[in-house]
Length: 255
Length: 130
Image 1 (tube, rainbow over the protein chains, first blue to last red):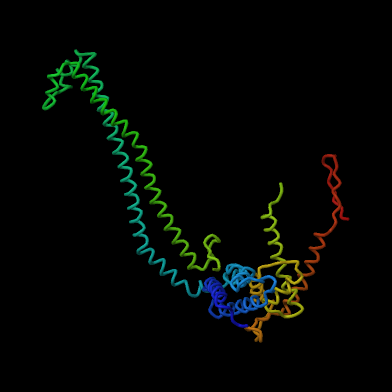
Image 2 (image 1 turned 60 degrees about the vertical axis):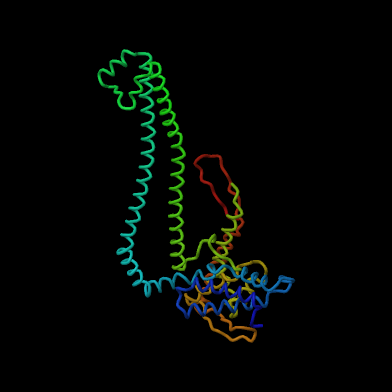
């Protein structure tokens, strides 16, 4: 009569552990007395649960029904926590809070500043990559535009071309001297071909920039998601340490 | 605008919370009980269903305020049971609170006669109790 079948006993023990966890800031004597009281209630409810309600059900289902009727640990202990928390907070936890404050001041703040520094550095580096990428694209477009203009000048305004060479604005040296052996039309054709290649490359880079931005945004979201998840884990752990009930979404129910 | 089921349930819960403490005192007024038997006494009429564990915060509150006293009693049917009974101050408070509740119930259950609307602007509306 006093004992449950093994599986039901495990479920009851698990439930009592959860209640105990909620009550860990309550003085041991008060907590043990309350646990004994609940234990007594569960025992009686289990053995007196009317047969017709559990007919054909196994011991586990019977125990689960008892605990379901009893309610969640957070509801059961709700009125015992505040007083106990205040008492233990003032009596026992104050030196710990002071120690935690000093530790944070000594190590947490410098580490936090370092972390912020790394994040800012990373952000600046990523912005630098974007800036450099668009500078290269702009350079290609500019070179393309210059070559295109020169090609058109060579065909349409040959006098202006000669004048620019005389004034030294256009200089053809080194391997480019081969260029002088070509006809004016050939020279214009080459310059327009080069210009087209540069312009196409510049425009291609601008188009690729969209993907670069998406990639970087993805990378940033990965970094910030990771940081957010880490913060959530820390917050959950702190809340558990304080003995506060977890949100329903994070509660584990009786197996 | 219609109210939702959720809204109704929330209000019923609020209403019950206040009354349940008084109901617990009422049960303990006549005889001492332990947690499980108290729940059975409250629910045996079938008019109310409650999570059994919610009785313990109420008992803890009453105990803290000195309205009930408790003692452990051995049981031949299983683990010891913690019995609760109203203290003298608990009985006095229950008497006062139940009178207050009677007043409130009579207020809620009064048959109010309809308001006689008037079309004359500026005239006061008069509500008459039946």
